[in-house]
Length: 60
Image 1 (cartoon, rainbow, N blue to C red):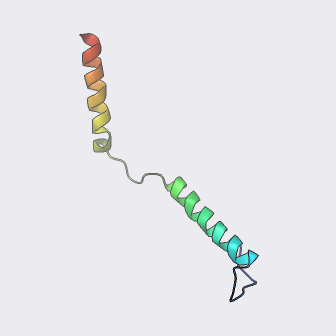
Image 2: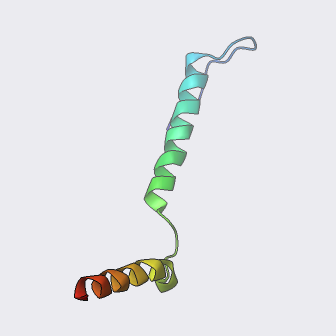
């Protein structure tokens, strides 16, 4: 964990830039690790239809 120590009123210090970068990376990792949330069977209905269509096409 990093807490910015040095700050200035007229420019972003190294500590402030590092804090922004780490905050962004933390949110990115949380988004990546959380995935898509809740998945239901209905979310895959189009894949089931596609598989059925392909099997029917191969049978002909």
